[in-house]
Image (cartoon, rainbow over all chains, first blue to last red; front, side, top):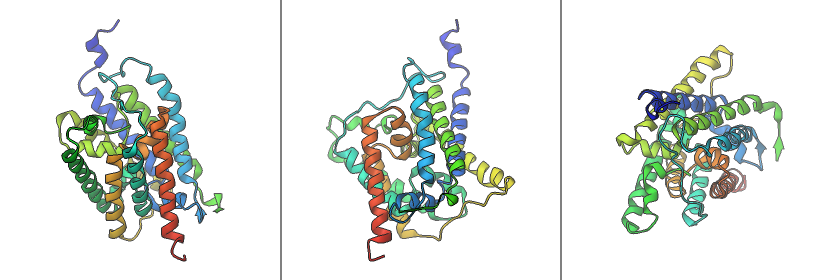
Length: 166
Length: 148
């Protein structure tokens, strides 16, 4: 039986695994050509020359997670890290739907969502840089605004970074 | 709707999607974290020590992209990823809306889509249906809405 200390492994282990996971993600986005906004916009344009590429990407990704997460989530803790960082909210509320609407409009205008926008900075184009600067401006101005107006709101702990994803 | 499957690289799309799913699997299984990129960027920019791991993931994403674009693609004689003309208005307007929307709705295509659907989260399913349909309406209005 391994001790708790051995179970964690050396300190360099977790960053290295996270780096490798990032490489897989970036390579997958590039290979699947999600870093080409025309592929994304072609998928969203269901009344034009429809391009189903994105459907294969999302299908492949969710096909993996929907199976693998079944085996991971029942565990009491991750293999190297100390605990699971999962969202606590399960409410389908106005910020969720309103946020998804705004995100959808922006996605349809730019052709980038955050992942492809980030990876595309490796390409010889200025567009992803402009997109990312605007993304950060939008995101942090909303955060500042909401923190000011709802600082006593019971859900205000949701803005904590480690809880900021579903 | 017209569909020309000859121009759809579905094999590499499926393969890329599987790699993205494996990435989310590795991150959750080993580190207990959700691979959502909007939160990854937002958290990284707080520059807190507890959020340092996000920079490792984001750095890895760039390495993976570079590996494909300047390593694997040329060696397989694949076309470089096409880039579009500079479109400052679309990028800034779209970027601001994506920034506000993903912060407000707590996630994007990766967090709600790849990971949230993988967790069978009803909240994420509602978000995915909403942003996909809204994006489709937006593209329709831009491409066909003004007499086009």
